[in-house]
Amino acid sequence: MEAYVVDWLNLLARWLHFITGIAWIGSSFYFIWLDNHLEPPTQPGDAEKGVAGEVWSVHGGGFYHARKYQLAPQALPETLHWFKWEAYWTWLSGMFLLILIYWYGAQVYLIDPSVAGLSSLQAIGIAAGSIVGGWFVYDLLCKTRLGDDDRLLGAVLLLFVAALAWGLCHLFSGRGAYIHFGAVLGTIMVANVFFVIIPGQRKMVDAHASGSIPDPQPGLQAKQRSVHNTYFTLPVLFVMTSNHFAMTYNHEYSWAILVAMSLAGALIRAYFVARHKGKASLVPLAVAALLLAGVAAFVAPRASAASGESVDFDDVRSVVHSRCTTCHSDAPAHPAFPAAPGGVILDTDAQIVTEALRIHQQTVVTRVMPIGNLTGISEEEREIINRWYQAVREN
Image (cartoon, rainbow, N blue to C red):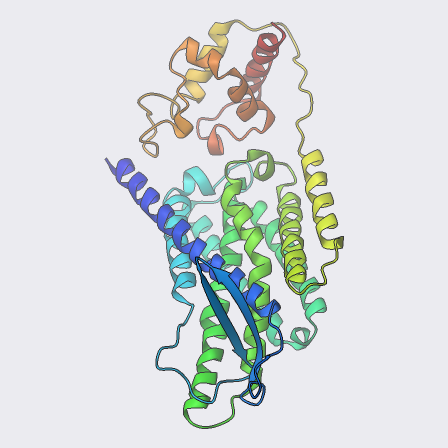
């Protein structure tokens, strides 16, 4: 019953995270687009009123006229919309999922004894520390003189996230490392909103209310952090989907793959930001394409030649039933799984034969199953699966 309740919490929290994430990323992308499409004001006197730019658009059967003020309008409206709860709820729901799946289920999803012999408490402590520490390191870098040079700061941040990826991948399981990498970036993004962007906007509003001229510096800092957020977005989205692709997170050089995919995502976003400004170079897009092609070639499965004599199916059945059906059964014995993961059931001989390709892919090629090697499959047993599959394929 406990696993069933956890499954429902997982479903509802994931649904909420998905919805709020769309709202946050959508508004973020829209305002980046809006800021980069502003044109000089056309109405006489608008510039004197502080209008820095405007843009007309059409959507949903209506026309919209958006203006941006250099500092603030002469009079603030009674209703002023703040875009913050989308970010906060995305982070809250994401952290709930992280705790529910990777901390509560640390022995299944976070810890891999072949990577590091951590206890659940040690792993969770390191995970939490990396999330909090990641924000403090990032924030400190932005507040140094590096923050005055966006390109230099960007290069240093790339080194920072590369070191983060390397460290996490040498401490946790592949899935656990990737998702915590995304959690660090996601926390930086929402902390930017909470500690820099929203406070900067409040200072502008308070200055206007007191009749003083707003200090432009908080607005410039907020814009810098907002730009960082938009470059972090695609890497975070990749991490959110990566647990479906063991070829990336279960590779020997998973940390390098994570860095390459993140850099490709940032470059793709940089291209679109530049395109909004009307002066987009194809170089970032080309480099991103080369990175993705390079990763695809690097993780491509190598031919796995079977060695030794052919195996009897009784041996295959024995391996599958002892190492796989603990979870992949009509009635899983493992308490963490109320139903077979992915709906893959291996109770009968016919089901094993039907899933031959998937069994070989997961146990021999990517070696991601059994997850965290919970059931202790041996190299000899993996070879049994390999020799059986090669024989099946040839026939």
